[in-house]
Length: 342
Image 1: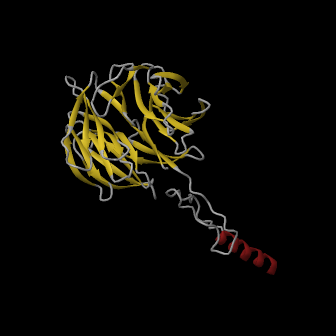
Image 2: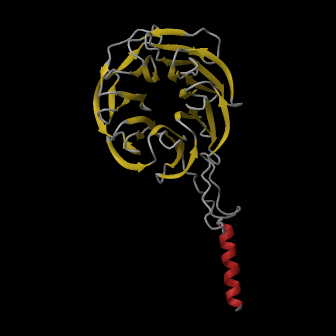
Image 3: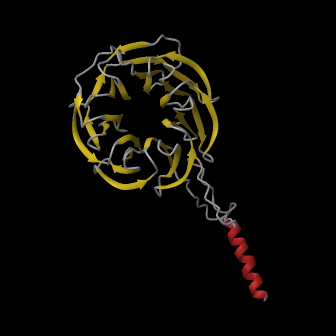
């Protein structure tokens, strides 16, 4: 009897030392990056548990945002958000901004516990979202209000509204000063330059077809466009268009690799991820991904990327060097935009 009591006491000490919970159904706390806790209370081995980075996926068909553990590639939970369209994360990985198209709001999710922190009224039919490199501003393309809405991410309040007809999506320059916003006015499509931090009036560059997704790189703005099986290039200083780069049918998301060696684009009719050589201005490689690929999310180290497949209800993981899919993750109905903690 005495030995059994000693064993029970020792077991309690061990459980307390490793921070176990005796509550049934308890789950691990997946915090923001760098929030791993040391095992023990000091004087132990000094080993630590690294918090798993999370990714956030807008599930248009489920009116929700899925939270994905990027180490295990499993869904941790879903967060209700109706008609989630645009989605972006702050560079510190602490907040996720999601445009709710049918409610005219942007939902702000805290990644500490993956709950909605607040809701920001931005106007009718918000779509694309972009976050400045320093994380201080969010640019919301609000098509129904014909505006680009600038949000202060520290206070989560609207700073200003800039007129942009049928604003759909945007990209932000590396210095965080300007957003290039796609205007989908049928009779006058354009890319509009919006001063995020100053008061310079917006400047409109006419284009041939309505922009879908945009990528700001050094010296070029790449964008896909409605009804064009190619990626357009625009000079950000002059607004002059270059020769379109032929791609698979219905290209959508476009973005540069971390090392700048390639511009990536997804073809929605072919169902692949395509590699554009920005020197040769042509597609030099492809990776089949699935049905109706929508968005590309790069890992911080630039070695891998997720691609959402809207018609397959999944996300695939792509090894960019090997140019092949290494994992397929069932995620929910109609995944569109996606963002990942750094």
